Image (cartoon, rainbow, N blue to C red):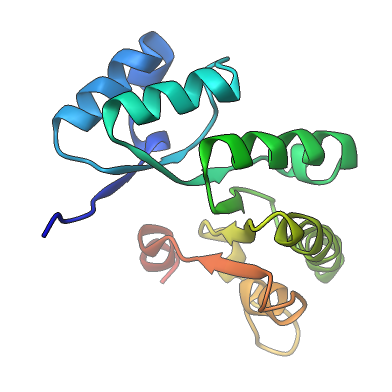
Length: 168
């Protein structure tokens, strides 16, 4: 039985910037079977799908910036790209949550993306860093508040355990 191993390509971003396709080839050669994208290196969806197929890699998820998620036309383009490469998750990798107003704003966008992308078979999610573990007035973490305000059917949490541990 083949074991599945994925890598978050942001971890090798310096290599990806120098040689995007060559780095994908090295990753596949190391035995990874899936990738989580943090940018597409300027490749079209068809080109990316061709490389993934050739290398035996699966597009597991993507880190898709808040600016792309919060603009309906850009969101449509992202959904189409995800459909071509077969990525099942579109994750917001960063938003500097500081206040409950920030939480409301991000939750509103993620719920919208979750509804729209969900119709295309793509789940939406949020990827944390350490700042979301700041507490608000009632003692709850900003991250908990964000997840409380999102639809659990269409918006998932990608918990970055490094940042959770770093935040204490």
